[in-house]
Amino acid sequence: MPITQQAINSARRAEMTSTERPADELVPGLILTQLFRAEADFLSAVTVTLATWGRRPEGEVRLRLSREPHDLKPRLRSWTSVFGSRQRSYYHALKNQHREPLVDLTLAADEIADNMSVTLHLPKPVVRSGDLLNLTIEAVGSRPGAATTAWLSSGAERIGGHVALYCRQFDQLEYGLRASATYIPLMADTPVPTHLMWSPVTQCNLNCVHCISRDTRKTVQRLPETIRDQIRSWATAGHLKELACDYSGDILWADARHGGELDFLIGLDVPFVIDTNGTHLTPEASERLSRSKLDHLSISLDAATDETFRRVRKGAPPLADVIENVRSTVEARGRVGGTHRIAISYVLMRSNIDEFPDFLRLAQSVGVEIV
Image (tube, rainbow, N blue to C red; front, side, top):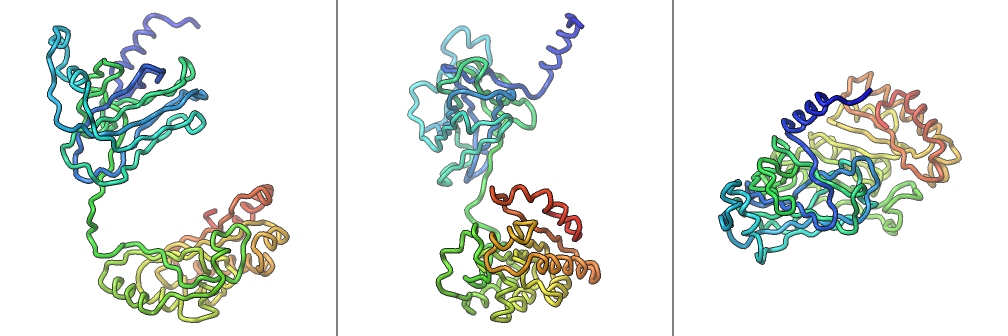
């Protein structure tokens, strides 16, 4: 069916009234220059959205964020700028400026995906409210038809503090980069972190092939009682909102071997998260956890067959025993009325990826809702 002129006009009107549109392709010689003012102190990051229209891009894309050394005033030097927006003359004021570089990021072609978010992280909190910032995006080695572009917006998705956006030297008027700025104050509302990751012991009963801690377990160390007292005081004062166990040592194994770990954790009376290999997830432990403030329980398995399980998770009992522990903890949660989520996890590796469909079926059969 041929496209009518009426359809073309309708599409053009829709494009003109839309609050979002892409910029021109980022080919060599085309630079997007976004001027915006910091809306608060302590700028931490700026995130922009790139696009490729589903194509494989060529060349690199370079993003630079800098701060203008002083406030710029719009210049009305030529007769053309008199008939245009005063914003347009900012482009001429930018020339020959020795601005302060803040972040410089270059993306290779294979690092760019369609509609991807790219975040520039500021290493130091040097930006203050009202500072005039300059964000440029340009490409190196691209060509028409295989170039990246950036999304623009004239609505709520436009970067906060927008002053002007230039494509080459042309003012894009009300359009700016579809981007966001993140501001993080230097001082928190509480004297200590509200969320802690806690490692009660440096050893584990397993020696899994993919564990990041397998080379640091030469000697066993437990968390000193003085630090436990500090954590207790933070919880009592209401500063501590959540505590999570890390992967260095299994807390349920540590509780079975050394004692007192679950007493300490449950006694804090704050929500907590447990990651475990499930070998010591006994019915008694499941009962206690179901009656506590446990928020999330994750059991690491990484296999659907006993052979793979024993090879990956060295020192483990039969897989069937651990699966029975998982089934038991699901039943305990239902019987007691616990509200925590239960997950089993699977680290995808070349040696176990073929078993993943069977693993999903296994999760469903024991009543686990998260993989």
